[in-house]
Amino acid sequence: MTYKVEFDKKARKEFDKLPLDVRIRFLPKIEALADDPRPPGSRALSGKKGSYRIRDGDFRALYTIHDDIVLVYVFRVEHRKDAYRGL
Image (cartoon, rainbow, N blue to C red; front, side):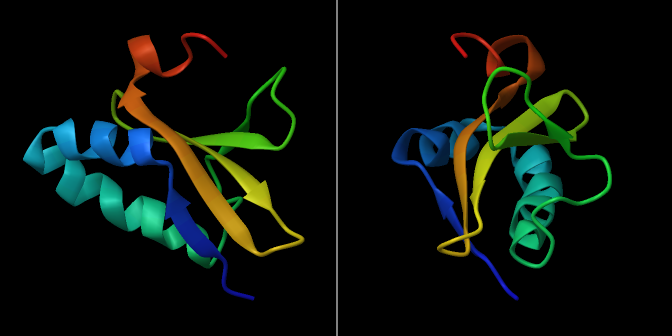
């Protein structure tokens, strides 16, 4: 089953502000969530039910998985020092 990967408006802006080399490396990992929303290396976020993170170097993509509607919703893409702020 293939999931739809959707970015939150704010997450898309955060992603677009990343350095070009990071975006080129990170985008395939985010797009791969469509085939496997829980890939090896992903971690569940404690305290935020149904939320996960994937990483690329010092950058994190935080997302939720909605199995009932077959959707992966990316809600934050930031440097690790800022990614978990306010959760």
